[in-house]
Length: 265
Ligand SMILES: C[S@@+](CC[C@H](N)C(=O)[O-])C[C@H]1O[C@@H](n2cnc3c(N)ncnc32)[C@H](O)[C@@H]1O
Image (tube, rainbow, N blue to C red; front, side, top):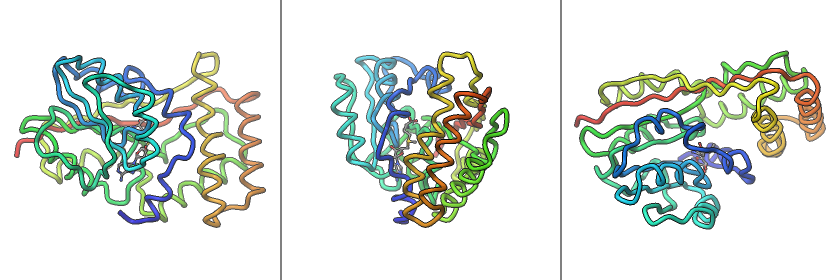
């Protein structure tokens, strides 16, 4: 893995991913899980969704969450203890499993990689014949905020996309997944829009709209270190965006697709 993408993918703070749930944050997976299944969750972070998977497949099932970040796996192990659930440090490009799962999934991970095709091939090898590969990911170029965000935050967002692109990450990965699934020989490919939409007045409005305050804070600091903006520009973008979320923000749509395919060979 190229070190730039690896470094830029790191998440020092994990509030957003800690609060995810299988039912709302990985809906297509929640629909296809059955009791007794063996499931691999690649890039599981601190394991919030992985725990939901283990609860759903029950004690006859088996769930493994892997992440290449040791800290994430340590937190996952501290937070989630179930007899059918385990967490391991491993890299998506070198998964230590062969044809043993009914489903391999990865949510919001391929967006951080510079070689998603290689990652998908590696995932494909972990499922049994007729098993499923299911990937959930974003097209960051199709985000919609209403009304428009402050110009300082718009500038931050453009730099964010550039910072990612320069590390080899594909900002539009969601819309390439079906093609990549075909390229690696998966069958029965299906696409499910799972856009993350939130309107003012809804219970999760504040937490969802503030994902971008966290990005400006956490990723913003990495971007400053990498010379993509100054600390002053970062601070003002974060401040103006936080104020926009409290006073003006009405709506956010993050474009997210779940794409699945079946392994036949
Ligand atoms: C945005 S988080 C998503 C976590 C969780 N799947 C979710 O949807 O909430 C992306 C995760 O992918 C992991 N990751 C990034 N590159 C990876 C790689 N090469 N191998 C394994 N995990 C990786 C990161 O450490 C991080 O935990």
